[in-house]
Amino acid sequence: MKRQTRSIQTEGHFGDIKENENFRRFNYRSEEKVYKEFMLYAIGRNMMKYHRFLHHEIEKYEGKKEQKTA
Image (cartoon, rainbow, N blue to C red):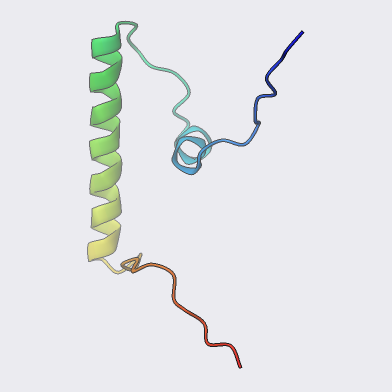
């Protein structure tokens, strides 16, 4: 019998949404309504992130900085 081992590690954003924002389930069942609900949530989340950026609570991410080795 072949079984796939499922990873218990969540993707970063989804884990953050579940734990920090307490978003556990959707209010609707149809695929179209769930999509709209998640898009509204994502837009609101991005607006909050932009607001924090404007007030210098977070900095612009410019990629990993190269470290010089001696």
